[in-house]
Image (cartoon, rainbow, N blue to C red):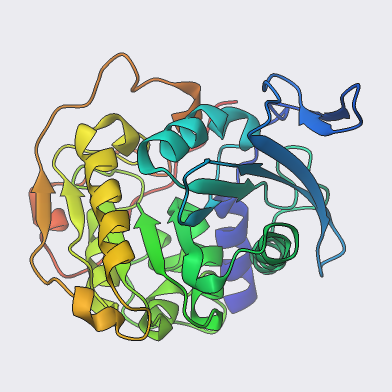
Length: 323
């Protein structure tokens, strides 16, 4: 029964765009590039071999005045070709380098997406940052969006002196998106509720109060379980795929990064703030339907107020995604 449930959770966790939004090619100078993405001097494309035997695509966006590098693990229904506009915005507004990658089976990465392969994938990317760019752990921030919170929280406890972690609409675990559970089962996937307690750097959680795919309670519980709590951002009216369209998103991400610059990595608890922050601004309607926010709708209804404010975990019903 456990294996069946875990397999079902895995199948529902990954929705790689089909067909992929890009291909990898060599330009006239022999540099790797992505179709549909302008290859400037500020972006590098890598093909990385993983411990799982796959070859994944990674992109590195350089900012000339960056202090930190953001290692970004994206959501479950996007690939790098759909994310590049957001990466440009993040790099520009936050003044950081952005390293992102496609999971095995996503975009032009080979293989099939599994929980274990996402762990191999993010490790290969982390190794590339150290080898190719000399990025130290104390200058790295791990960023996990939705399913991307899984590989993020798998890697974070392993990195000594990691500067910080951002969890964007994160999940407590794979099965907890399906069922209301208070215990972690061995056959669960992405056991974030357990792993976040092992992270020794500041954890910044961002979640929308109207998220009908991964209930807001997931973000609240992960923040409460964090060792080093950073003031979370609960975006009033925010859903699962539109938080980037709220002005508070960039404003408080920048504040988080500014605060990380001020603390000692040997005393991250100095940054602990226990008062949640709410944002009530409306999103920009012109950008809310941008392709980079595409995502399958796991749930077929919005959680009511009683569900949002309950300590229990939501049990959204899964709906088929139209291709």
